[in-house]
Image 1 (cartoon, helix red, strand yellow):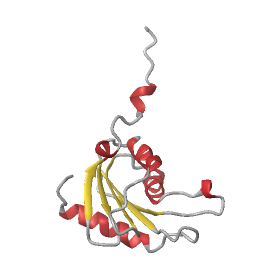
Image 2: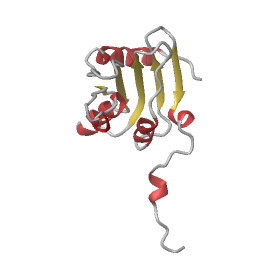
Image 3: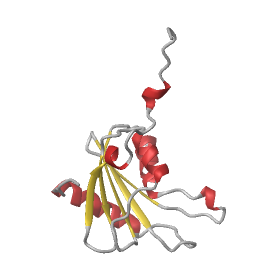
Image 4: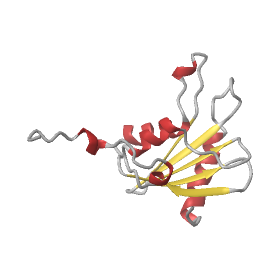
Length: 140
């Protein structure tokens, strides 16, 4: 577990603000996320549920998609907040999606209470399947 910093609290506030706009009519579990780029930009996202559950998108991937759509790929941190009492952690799919852009990013997690957890993504997803696994050495 890492120490909570002032920039972590700011990013968490962006995620909490975004959470209010979540679309969760089925689970009633609203999630907001915010990613921070190396260039100093912040992008937010929310969970958007769908009656065909497989079409649902998580807040973390929505925020990541917003950053990538705007041309940013150097993600240094993500904040995630949900309606749970304990800090909300990214699901496995979101961990994998985030790892594509920086397996060492800070992950700031909050819930409905004041408790906050801070970890690195590689602590949450050790040995992530990342770009290097797709490099092919044709001499072997």
